[in-house]
Image 1 (cartoon, rainbow, N blue to C red):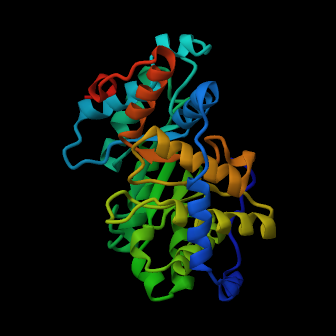
Image 2 (cartoon, one colour):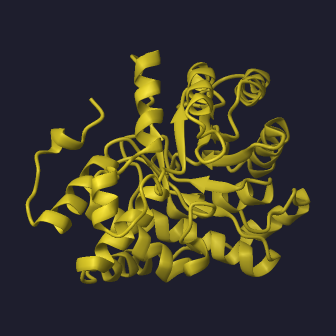
Length: 321
């Protein structure tokens, strides 16, 4: 996952005092990026396959069942049919999603299913944790949830911060909480969800991004997918600029994960283009970039099918249902 900082001295939080965001400039940059012509033809197919390999295929419903999780794992192992892969010049079984993402209680099922398929080393098991999606639980129970999920087979943990710490500018407390969560992860990678739609301003998003990285996060993630406002290109730019500043000043690379509301192949291309423009090619791989998504894969499959055959198929042809 590139070079990572173990933890930073809390004194570094003085860095936050120099943060200023030009909101109008952020929106201008987003508009410019989104006005670019989309890639076409074989280049589009290649970018879409890259997007597939960066998906954390997700199910986070209150009605999740064992069969749902097993189906998710099967889809992660073969997200694109072998017929389509062969038609695009790829070997059978050569593409998988980066991870499956589930609630902690479903981690044992996901891990056992992937292991039975021989995919436990190719597909990560990601678990949301720390009182997802609100984060409004005692710290000791949030820490215990992380440890339990890791013990049951999760090698990636998507934590969610207590947004009140950001709203109240309690940066040291936020740093300490994330640092303890990172320690609880052990060897598992930590993705820190900021829930940007509830942070109030771009400045808060930027500062929370810096604090999360200082505390040892391997990725920073936009949203739980449960907020009224989730991943948007403007907030993605703000977070990527924080990642770039952190990398420039410390030499450590941190990954980025947009989540929530990313549903179409066109959406995925917009995010990949933004990432390439803001952070460069080093981030265009699943060790440094992920999509948190449940419905995105189906639309990418439709677009790949259209590229191969010239015809669009109905959405349900590529659903997991």
